[in-house]
Image 1 (cartoon, rainbow, N blue to C red):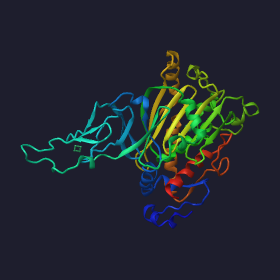
Image 2 (cartoon, helix red, strand yellow):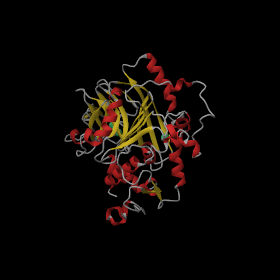
Image 3 (cartoon, rainbow, N blue to C red):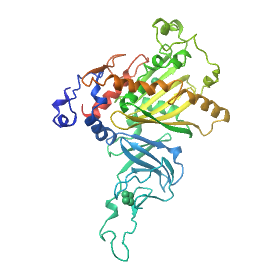
Image 4 (spheres, rainbow, N blue to C red):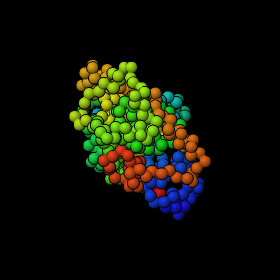
Amino acid sequence: MDIRHDEGLKETVSNGIWPEESLARVPYWVYQDEANYKREMERLFEAATWNFVCLEADIPSKGDYRTNHVGIMPVIAVRGADGGVNCFENRCSHRGALIAFDDGGNVGNQFRCVYHSWSYDLSGNLRGIAFERGINGVGGMPKDFCREDFSPRKLRTTTLAGLVFATLSPDTPPIEEYIGADVLGRLKRVLNRPIRVMGRFVQPLPNNWKLYVENVKDTYHASILHTFLTTFRISRLTQGGGVLVSPDGGNHSSYTIAIPEGANANAYKEQQIRSDLDGRFALADPSVLDSVEEFGDHIQLQILSVFPGFILQQIHNCLAVRHVVPRGVGKMDLVWTYFGFADDTPEMNRRRLKQQNLVGPAGFISMEDGCVGGFVQRGTAAAAEQVSVIEMGGSTAESQATRATEASVRGFWKAYRRFMGY
Ligand code: FES
Ligand SMILES: [Fe+2]
């Protein structure tokens, strides 16, 4: 489709042309174009999508809050007086300052803007204005000023298995329907009881946000890029597994089942794949891989995503949610939250702590993911009109019983193009 045919787009996307209908070709300007980035905020993040804002376990009590972003919009998620979770724009309706500037905490009954002390209740309603009546009858706000007309934008929230999502649109379907039955089943497989937050950090990445989302959905790369996964046979394409893609393409779950590789045991060596260092390296302390079967189905690795920017990870007993936050066309933050379950034994807690070395910015497995998005961003600097080839496993976006496929990456583009009107 030539997007120049769309009159509205002619002005917003400088020189971008979607090359063809196939989901297997994506032009590189999508990672570079400022106008496209702005359009994503309106068409994706502020439209009929569910955006992860926090865990219920982050805000168990009234007045507990977390700050986050929906696209570039700063938001506050707070446990309200009625026990529900409210979410509203983190923007004071006076002059636009952040209402809350910490990552989280407990705010009591109200938020108070630091700039001129206007205050907001736990639903985001403007409640108080400092010196509203002036001093000795002089100054102050006009008598007919109506506070109700000046509250920050409110988002609809929904909770699912301990996750909190928010949306600005009245049209976003119920979260279960949005995720789709197959992927929902895999989400509930991991989030099957009350969780316990173990730690969190933010990893800035030098690439467009979509490059990280693609990386997460790209199960083909995992055992080729990641030396640790392959060498210690945590996940190889030659083991069992596959990828589930929701009917609309936007959500996915990939998984590895530890079955013997049989005749394929030497496939990586035969293809001279860099990541296979089996026989050359061993772990001095193998206890980092001391795992227990936790979910009763022999799936040792499962990565799941919900469009546009939520990720749930199970690598052995290392559990985390990751949240993709755009920070400009060529930058993003990856917000990690490690968790376990409220009923973990001390032994399981130690096991999870040790396995958390597998992921994160310096993780034995996922440190390479912090680089490859930047490699693509740099490699495509002069190639806005060129295209990537996303054709492993065909050119459609259905679930497949293999991980030698890019079906879920194509699924992302299927959903993306629908929302963006491309
Ligand atoms: S900007 Fe918040 S009170 Fe003035
Ligand atoms: Fe990876």
